[in-house]
Length: 184
Image: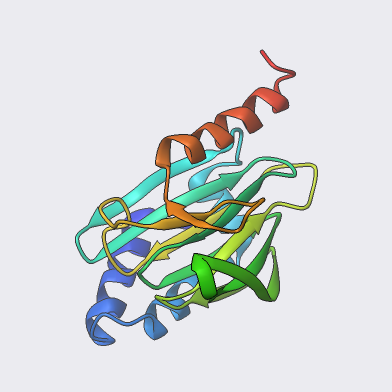
């Protein structure tokens, strides 16, 4: 069964081996989600959309992110590398590139399904959609302190850059939970 303490230790060891880069961490995450049943047994079946902090240090953050059914998060950046592994459900990513005037334009996409793992570089801008009508669970490992970094998001209508609004984005998870329970 997936053991969170061992997983965090393995990520820390991989981070040191790779001198702060993501290659070895990607292998740790890929190995974990290659057995999604084990991750589900270790973390529990997702019941609510949300962001659960599993490990947090200045050089490494591990999150369990559960996307609500049909939930979408607008284009945003991390300014640190990320490794994403899906242990249940689906996560569709649109990748964006900066263009003149502080805007972005779509530049590619990647569909992640249960058992898939991918890396997002430091400069990647992406939006995320859970395309299915049930919860999606993903382990996100970041090469830094995810919670202290100034980040940007882009307005979905104008595609103009703005400061990342944590409170607004956390409300999206709560709205997804309200929809799951019929608004109660």
